[in-house]
Image (cartoon, rainbow, N blue to C red; front, side, top):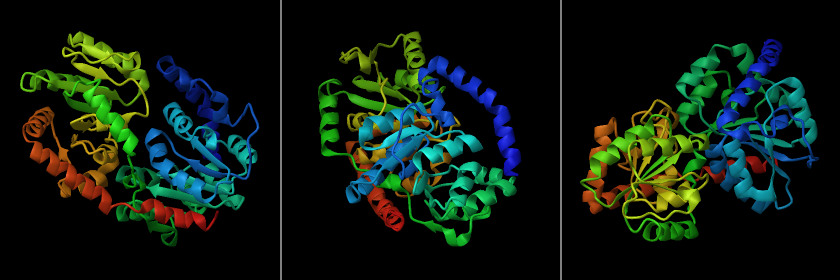
Length: 419
């Protein structure tokens, strides 16, 4: 089955290359360093590394505290972080700088995997969340490289997809030494697609182990009083196509009731910054753009955050946060950064990617789910009018996070057995 899979992968490489070219029209970084995606490198790297893979920004952000713990315990260890997206790559470089090696993960074709492994010779492979690559896993198994899937999650939809190809997935999972699942449900779904029950354990979600430094909090408060002039700030974070239009409509509706309202929009993907600015202009809204250094005037309607890696800072400067990817059927994004920043959290009906976190937050009264535009309007007006309710919501949210922390320490203990 893996031979057929590999043959098919080789056949679709021209399509993959065209897709990279297409995406590079709006995001040029997709075309740069393309050789890394086939494991051709322009410089020599250290081998005998501890290798971590995080697909994009969210997984990388969650991984950084674990990386720092390992660096603290093993200052001489050589660490490699791979990502798949340019935004994830940029975040690794910005945060970890030269303390780790970083390249893109190559496509799962046999010769690419072989070149990658020969270059870095990992002594431990750690995959974040749900990345099952048959050739990569087979190489680890054949060469006795301990392979861990940490913070592992698997949706019901993905599980059904994997169950259709057991001849490919079961051998891949046989090469895994340990699957550290986020929840009991994730654990059962991994077992249902072929993971050995004795290899699966529930260690929790490392995204709960978030810490926002005092420096970031102070910078955020300075941003609010200085750049934003102390206005009531509603941030729409990690928004996707179609969501900004809804948020702008909501802004127009509630602005007469909250005269000092400022809408802060932080789109999920950098290639959409220009499009969002254009949408604001079409509605005759005054926009200040972060990278220009523009200061918000009393007449400014929208503050467009056209940067990456600043969400924590922007959350701490806000009064209400709406988490994007949830008003359109994307599946939602992580609400825990906003909670840790102490800002009341709203999200829409589509939270499949963070189903357990969202449900837990709702159960604990730690967030508000808004099923439509009208619900968002009502929630913002209530939070604006009732400071005591805002405080109650954020206190319950912080308690919810504290009660679920500890996964990093548990995962670290497991990895220590190999390091």
